[in-house]
Image (cartoon, rainbow, N blue to C red; front, side, top):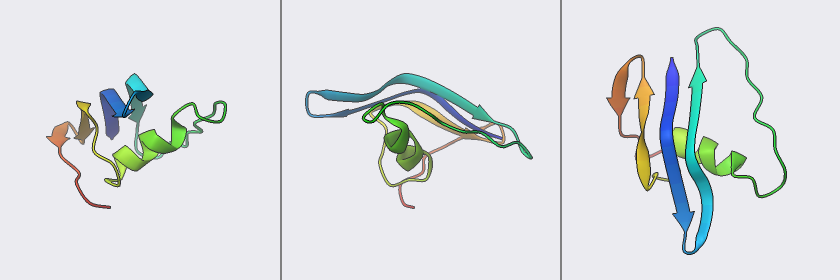
Length: 70
């Protein structure tokens, strides 16, 4: 299981993700939809380590993780 808990990311004055929560269970398929600029790509880049969240946590199989590289 992968969870993003209360993830926040800013780029200067721009708030890209504001306390988002995502939970993905094994064997499931999810779509993340929204308008351009809604923060979808930013959230995924945080999940795989391209960006680091300003706050919040990533949890993999119940264990908090710090993913710093893709």
